[in-house]
Amino acid sequence: MTKRKNRPSTPDEVRAKMKARAELDSDLTRLGSQPDVEIELEPNGTIRRTQRMDFASLLLRRAAISVAAFNAYRDTQELHATASGANMGGGSMDRVDSSTQGAPGQNITQAMVDARTRLDYLLGQIGTRNARLICALIDGEQGGNGPGGCGQWHITVERVTGEKNEDTHAALVRGACEGLAEAFRVRGYGRAA
Figure 1 (cartoon, rainbow, N blue to C red):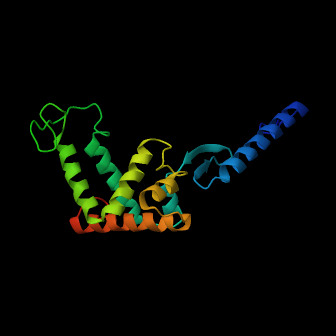
Figure 2 (cartoon, one colour):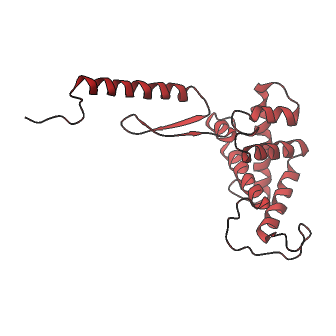
Figure 3 (cartoon, rainbow, N blue to C red):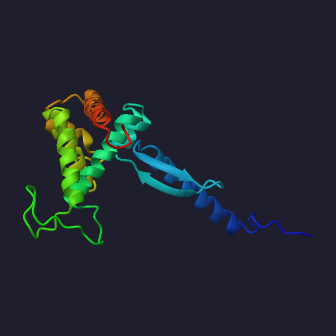
């Protein structure tokens, strides 16, 4: 006689398994009701991982922005991080001893100068309001759950543009990101080119 491995054999095991399944269903219901949470499940139905999406991923998932605009926003985030030195890591730095952007000895690298030059060009091509909006959204995201984060991005859009109608916020972000995509395309920068 063979014993089945995955079936509980005692009433206590049955109750424990039912309780675990009820807790999982509760978690799935709670997380699934949040539009900015992405849930990845194991084949057996348990949660493998969850991830809170930023506003750009959420807008892409809702088809509110194009893939080119999404890529342009991501490339702009990367340029912003490089220009500020946030993604330089602990490796060796190729110093620029003298430049108009930084004084000698301030750990300004050529990559940072180049990224700032590209960023300034791109933001200059999309208009002041759109540039302010993109920078505010990037700055908010770098702060974690700040105003650029998924749940708070509407606050940032309202603060920067003055637009109180939340239904138009995605369109304003789309306009700014599409402008970035066009600037990337014209200049031949990044994935959006």
